[in-house]
Image 1 (tube, helix red, strand yellow):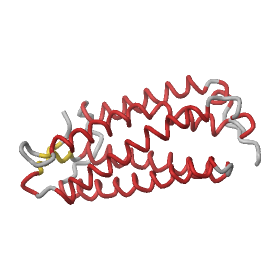
Image 2 (cartoon, helix red, strand yellow; image 1 turned 30 degrees about the horizontal axis):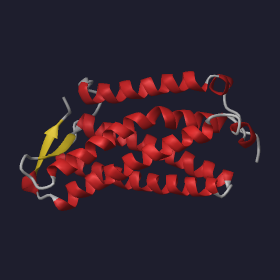
Image 3 (cartoon, rainbow, N blue to C red; image 1 turned 90 degrees about the vertical axis):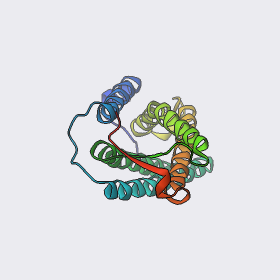
Length: 200
């Protein structure tokens, strides 16, 4: 495999770059959700529904990439593993853009009090959100190492250990997010769902 090297700063200071990118990501999401920044076009409930479906498809594809990447690295197929993980990372960036547009310009769906399995739904959603927040720095760190080091060099870094944490937290978060979406779309009726514009 050809040598894989990134910019010098990323290669020599992956933790610093990870901290900076993680902070920027958190600020962007929190600012969109709670800051009323006014950057997004106003979209209606039907568009929110379409974007939610697109997000579910993207997240399902990301799960497929992560599982494939895990399988390939377990079998020593480094190039395929790298391709799968970079595909997953690209998909999650696309997800982020669509999610911010959907939520910042539209809103979200909530299950009304008294709906069946509401506690289960909210519990899954809470774990999904928590793990998605936790996964961010691990994912960025693993990807940074993977992009700036050769396979031989990666053996001398914490890439494998961090990658396992990243994939585990990311996978569980994605699966719970897709299940929550399917419950919202297929299990609950319109009378059990409330559209809430914005977040704050």
